[in-house]
Amino acid sequence: MNRENSDMLWERAKRVMPGGVNSPVRAYAAVGENPVFIKRAKGQYVYDEDGNRYTDYIGSWGPMILGHNDPRIVSAVKRQSELGMSYGACTKAEVLLAELICSLVPCVEMIRMVNSGTEAVMSAVRAARGFTGKSKVIKFEGCYHGHADMMLVRAGSGTMTTGSPDSLGVPEGCVKDTLSAVYNDIDSVKRLFERNRNEIACVIAEPVAANMGVVTPEKGFLRDLRKICNENNALLIFDEVITGFRLGTEGASGYFDVRPDLVTYGKIIGGGMPVGAYGGRKGIMSVVSPLGGVYQAGTLSGNPVAMEAGLAQLKALCENPQIYENINSLGEYMREGLRTIIEKHNLPYSVNGIGSLSTLFFSDKKIRDYGSAKSSDRETFGRFFRFMLKRGNFLPPSQFEAIFISAAHTKADIDRTLNDADDFFTAEKN
Ligand code: HOZ
Image (cartoon, rainbow, N blue to C red; front, side):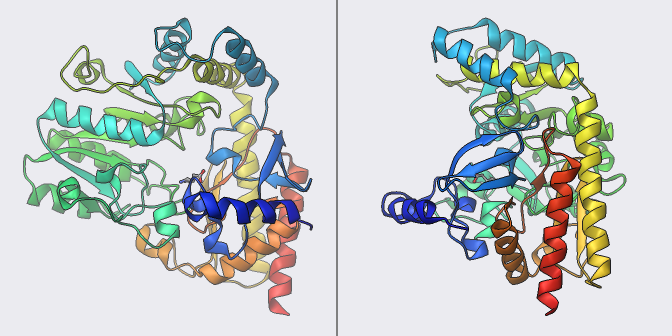
């Protein structure tokens, strides 16, 4: 596969951007490969600067639920951009999107639009602190909630990939109120509440952890989190940047029937445009400025192009709930296929996932938390990634990210990918 143009761009990129990228995972450092530069995308495919086509299993890290360039989203973006890109003023589209989300997600009675998942989390935690009058926050090792200072403690995603789960440049004071618990281990949460009585403002969790690879909540874990927060007058925040409107129109809170107090969203509600939002019960959201004393603002918040794109995507999903059945069953099909291959080759690996999110873990451990996820053999993952890329599979370039399937994928796409995976393991034996 010729990737001359990508390689040339990579050399130029490294001269002018830190590590050649605008987001660390894209540097491909964890998989020993030069990054692929994408020129265009359509449906389930992305095309690079050399004209190579790949089946895309990243989908812009989640938002492309309908596949790339869905005509409904593209025409919404075109229509709005001709009317104006940004006004820094109120628009009808932001009201429509807020109304739609509030009508779909029972725990969201009020919502504030922001520009990214990072901003959503930062603001939701501030609201939780303002509402409860308490300071401490419990998060889970390996869960990623964006790059706000207080969240860069034993974080997942790129920080895990680059082996720096805490970050330089974060003053001690910023993280002194951030406590880390172990995902799927309710006792670790109980202990933190016991040691910090009446000091915990909130617990924030990815209801399905998808930034240490996919790690699903074990039976009762989310319900127990809800209970422990109630008992301690702490708020429960679900970070649904990845699961919101992907696991269904009610997201993970609907899927697991556990109602958090606050929810954070990201790119999915903008159909791929840069967006985030946080929402929850009216009583809590009323602390947010200008209604209440928790300040949070943004010129581009509720940007009309992003709102129209998000509306188009969410409407399409609501009008055709069959989409969820399709992507979830394709996800299951892929997981079953991978498990069959692992068994056939007598490998100790495992496949985690839920709905359209999956991860093949190169580990002999059951992956249920950060510690077990970290046991994965990243060398073998790197070889697997490179082999699959050469065959035209655009997989996440890290063991600690999720494979995303969209409504544009077909069984034939998955079959081709599974055949390639089978070939990889056959080649590994020889
Ligand atoms: N942290 C993102 C995945 N969980 C990667 C973002 C990107 O590189 O675009």
